[in-house]
Length: 218
Length: 213
Image (cartoon, each protein chain N blue to C red):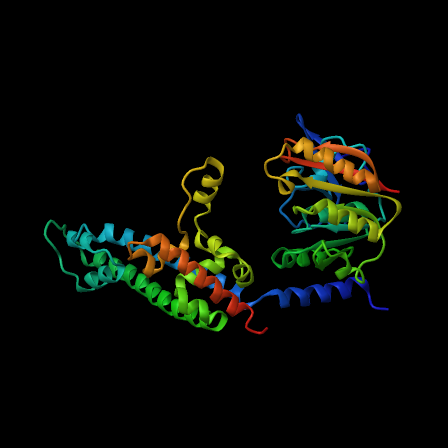
């Protein structure tokens, strides 16, 4: 198990293929992933964070002991790895909209001390503002047309100054026909009005028509 | 001080419990009804093939109920092979299980009707049990059916043809699930009636959803 330049993420080579790992907090598995000597395997085809790491993003902006706001947590696959990275003294607030997936998210959160489930609409941050604190990192993975808008809203409301945030953009839910590259340019302009865009990584072929933006709050 | 984690867990669990409404249960009941139909059809087809070696006349029977009745009589037909007692008994046991499933389907259909009259009595009157439940299932919930426009309701269930039309300019579909309504499938002016019926269903859905003001 070798350390990478990203804190909390490890890599290992099996034959010619590289695999990503995080150090598990409790040695439990939730989604049938591989567990090797206390390290859980992160599948980059299931997680956009993992795909960004494989595609050599400059940094993930995530450190130990961070407080994280995770929008669009779904079943909690990527969120559980984020909770591995931030460790026992960090907290991951997992926000999702659909009751069906939050049911399974609650089961994961019961096992994990540092994960907190919230059933709320990320488009309306006012509805859960009394349930979260200020955070060090915002991760947004919501397949909605207003995803950039809601990302900026949440960043303004909850992110501490000079902290990092990450947006995993699905071009197809903004416009199904347009060329994704053009959408990325428009989104980058929108983001740079409010934030400092540090790195832009396209996730093809791991995730089709997806792009990850790493930004810093001014 | 209340622990943030415990508070959030409690609130989230309460929210999830609140989010389940009767129309979601209705959708699940419809799915299980569809599954039961598929299972009954498959089992009765395999039983028919098996029993036809003994009595080839059963191949003419279309309904599973008739097939089960024929097997209970144990008559051998022309061209039929000799079946021993063991074989006949095995056939009978198999058919009894299918009979139980058919009874279960009947009870389940009654349950679905009761649920519909509770959730959406107006839709039930206009469209009947199966079409109404299917429309709610495709729309996702009663709310999303109530906010739809009537042409959308008319082609619900014909999404493939609709998007083919939007993409390749082929002819648009005239009806989706609504076609199963006896008024449409038995008449000559199908498209006209489909348009009218769809608008009536939408009015009924709005009346059901906004009945509490």
